[in-house]
Image (cartoon, rainbow, N blue to C red):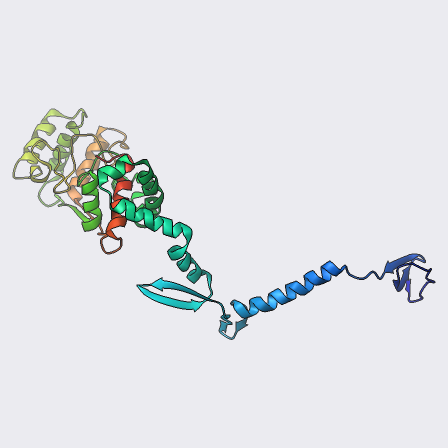
Length: 309
C-alpha cells in the first residue's frame, strides 16, 4: 500500500518522489545524467534535420521529398532528383570508386585481342567476375546458372559440342547475331517404320547395337533423297557448324535424352519422335542490349566455362 506522506529527510540525502511502499520502500528522485540529456537533445535535433533533408513524412498519396538531391547521368543527360536509394545507386554506379575501376577494366579488356585476354590472368579474373553477372542476367534463364543447359531444350555450354562453333569469335558472332536452329519434322514424309530406321542408324553411329536391317535402311534414308538428312548433317553425319547442324556421331545428346532411356527400344523411340516432330529454337541477338565490349567480355566468359574450342 502506498501513501503520499513524505518521510523525514536527513541532511545530504537524495530526495525522493514522496511515495512510500510497505513502510520503507521509497523511489529516489535522482536527476537524469547530463550526458544522457544532451544525447536525447541531439537525437531530437538529428530527427528534425533528417525530416528536412530526406524523404520522411507521408502526405496524402505522396510523401515529403526533402531538400537533399542526387545528380546522375541518364541516357547521356544529367538528371537531378530528390534523394532516394535508386538514384543514389545510379550515381554510385557511375561515379563510385568501384564503378570507375570497373569502367577502366572494361576499356582495358575491350582493347585487347581474345588471345591476349585468355592468356592474361588479371583480364580473365575481371572477365569471370564481371561477366558472371551478365550471364546471370541474360543467359542463365535458358542455359542455367552454370551454363549446363537443359536437355531437350537449351544447349550445354560446358561441353565441347558446339552447334555454331566454339571459338571465341564464333561465340561472339552468336551473341551479336543470335541464332535460329531449325530442323523440319518428318512426320508427313516418313512413316513410323522409316522413322525408327533412321533413329536406329543414328544410334548405331554412336556405338549402340542396333538391328542390322534397320540400320541399313536408315542409312539409305539418311543419305538419300527421301530423308535428305545429309544436306545439313553431312554424309558422315559429323554436322555442319555453318548451319548449326549437330554432330550425330560423338554420342553427345543435347536435344534428345538418349542416356536417360531405359533400353534400346526406348532410345529408338525417343530419337524417332524427335525426327518426326523436328525442332525450332531461337536465341535472340544481344547487339541491341549489350555494348561491343560487354559482348566481348561475355564471349570470353562463355568460352572459359569449359567447352570453348
